[in-house]
Image (cartoon, rainbow, N blue to C red):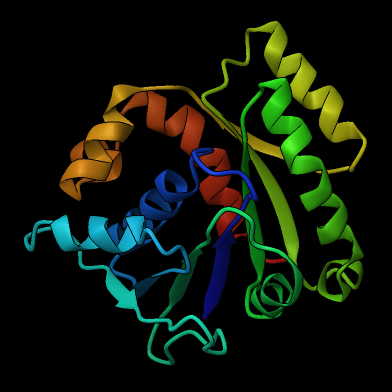
Length: 208
């Protein structure tokens, strides 16, 4: 079983977009996939409810607020979508339950500063210090041709964290959130998907 968490203390940075697309891609490959959501807004849960029944199935990982984060035993991949402000004991519990953490970060200065303390908290946790958990950064709504992308790379040098890939802004992600249908369900072979998502997917399936 492989377990992934998508986390960032800031809301609106693209956590649910990443989580639902990761779940959809694994499901496309006939894997047993569970998607859990710790956020009270339950964005990923609502997306699952809207998902057409003819598409590759993704199961809901039911998690109560005080429950220990143990993924279902009968799955190949478990993906955890997390709320803004995740920190402290709950963050440590989550880190002890997963293999890799995907952190979406935009290139705005405000978003980068809001993420700084989160990176510092990650670095201080035992699971990360002992390299039991891999951390990968995904630039969200970032164009690699812009000065803003350079600023993001410069910011991340401070924490020695890799930018796995960058996902450009697109209305298609808003449509996916509303319909339960991801880009992988619609056009898994598009050039944009291959160039933007392939590095992340390869990173996810690669062992430590």
